[in-house]
Image 1 (tube, helix red, strand yellow):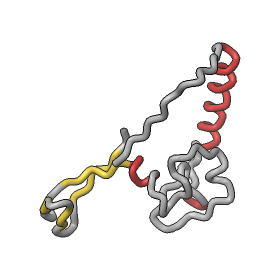
Image 2: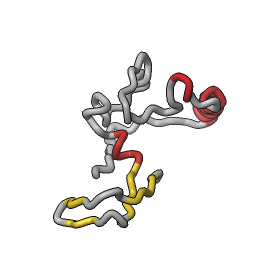
Image 3: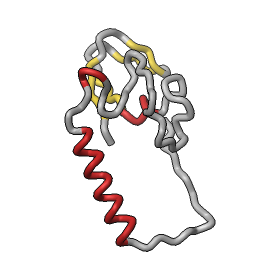
Image 4: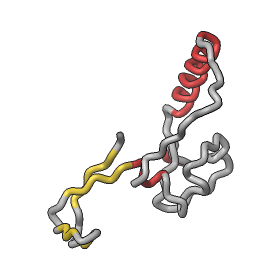
Length: 106
């Protein structure tokens, strides 16, 4: 699971815990991606989520936008296309009528 380690810049009281400025905290990327104030219906799988998306300051956008756009994004899309092509053609799929969907809640 991806996370980012940071040192606090000031004293913080969080859920009856007092964290000093020397404390190190771990910020999990998935928590930022599940913020309903940043993303509409964050728990819903939506392939068109990033089409015509206007970025807000501080929001996470895969591959970035504008002048900071990731140069490897086209390679990643090509790799995913090739993988899905082989995966869908070479494996058998069966539909099960009962399924369970789990979310990691923070």
